[in-house]
Length: 293
Length: 224
Image (cartoon, rainbow over all chains, first blue to last red):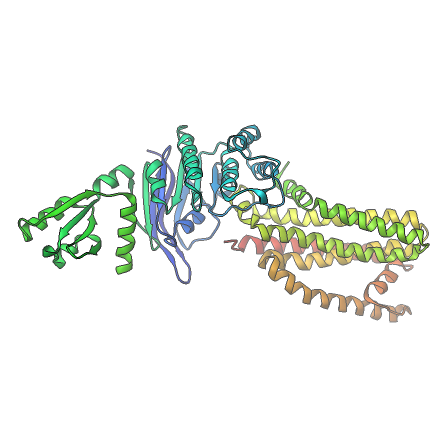
């Protein structure tokens, strides 16, 4: 399987935060969801990918090309939407589409304009008069108007209402139906990722916690709810993001068989519940675990 | 259209209303002065033009800073050098266009006044020097910090400009007045052409060096 993004051993240091040994790959023709809580390092990774900020060590390749050496060539093949939308507020949506889109050699103005129409954006309207959702759609029209091979979206649905979020997700799903286009989509709204992503990468405190197929993650990770009489340290150590309650404790693990075996060995006849987890559970539990550390 | 020209055109488009207003204001002053028979007061116009040119640089930087559009440009296939070249080019084109306009007005209203042509040239040179000083700071630190630092620098430049004609004037027997008047007198003098050529060369050199420095600064600048 060919990869559109390949990151190896990425380190980026700030005073109070750093990316540590970030490594993962995005396969061609799929949507990868990049999840993590606010401040986990999602935007920093994306800015490194887009060569917007320098990094200390590691390699980033897009389409097999070094992202710093071939920055311009790569950007011609990528559509990017940032968390905040940056436009000349006094200019119109139509002008913005033509001006920013015009930097792409393969820019298709008719297609860009048709996207504006589809999104219900009046090209004659000033950017300052557009809502946040409309600005995201305008940014998407610019990002898609040159038919990119890779779409990189940095929390595009953050702060939007469910209707607009749903429309944007639909559009992304449509985009990858053309197998030449891949999507790398960061969000802390895990339900959005769960809806459309084929692959998921989870980052916390600047480290990649896991990166795998979404279905594989969901089937591999299980939530255990166990009665308090089995609350031994050796058992708790096998779970992540443990929460203790009045009657029992709960936690998640990606080795459910091993956990059940150990539970039965130490506490024969112990009562427990094993449940499937959502990406939201996974994110919350992993965040809780890192806070405890 | 290449990237540089695209950004140059954008600099004019985002200021279209302001430019139109400035041109109208200048023409209005010309009409008033001419109607009142104050042709010699047209010498004041280049000073207004200097303000307008400075406003043009400020506004184009301010728009990018306010809207954070440099961040979006950084995500597009645009070389940072192109952004810098375009800014220098648009400010240069605007200055040349305004100076031509003032030159034409001077020629029409007071055709035999060598001083008015000299005043236009003087303003152009001063503007080019101002721009060459201002831009690298703007590209290094951004508009908000640059505008504060430049206030102090320009104060120093104007004091210096005031001193040069005084010093040169004492050699040529010319009494130096304020900075610009002294400079204008110098350019309108008998050796005017030679001095104009000298200043043109110096300002062009300064402009090119400034552009190179801005490119280095802007490449290193973290926009995020």
